[in-house]
Length: 286
Image (cartoon, rainbow, N blue to C red):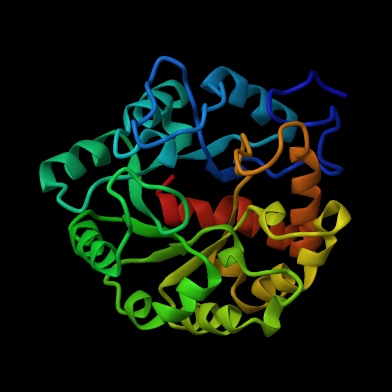
């Protein structure tokens, strides 16, 4: 048993210990020292680095990827501060406007940022996210060695933008299982798109956010979808806790149970190690 962790229900640890250098490849830091963007109308949680370190101790992860949340608009100061605190075991994914210059991207790269997130789902400080913005940013990212573009999209947007996504000149990382409904699973039209993108060899998927579309206890309805992805491309999957779980009602997400769910998706220790250690090492340059 362990001490309670902010924004994480329960006291249990994962049923089996994680491998050394296991990476949580998707989480957010919210720190009251940094002001939210004027466009963001909800009160952000208090989820600083010190609280996240407690989660690392509970889960047994040693590496992490800090993703700038929409809360801060295009201000990456909170994420950069978190990277400074977390040290070399952390990498960042930033949010920028499409007019961003190379000098700013160079500055972010020097602080261990390794990609840009383009969000089509939640409110953004610039207004509506467009396909043109995505392609413009991808061209700029292509000048940064080892960088990728990460997209958060609805399944119908994956379908509509398949051609655009397939043509991006940099690795593409798709958030949160593509937000595909577990009830549809591998039969979903968006899953077919995702498979074609994955088969192209340049796309990765984050096995995260199981709760976003699940309607089953312990998110068991996600098994067919996630297991199909594991069978298809175990070499281009990463896992993320999505702590502090801002899309969910407070007091509803147990992160240790999410790790156990990943084990059910992965099916073996070897695949677990691939998803938690080998793949993030390649994608984020650890």
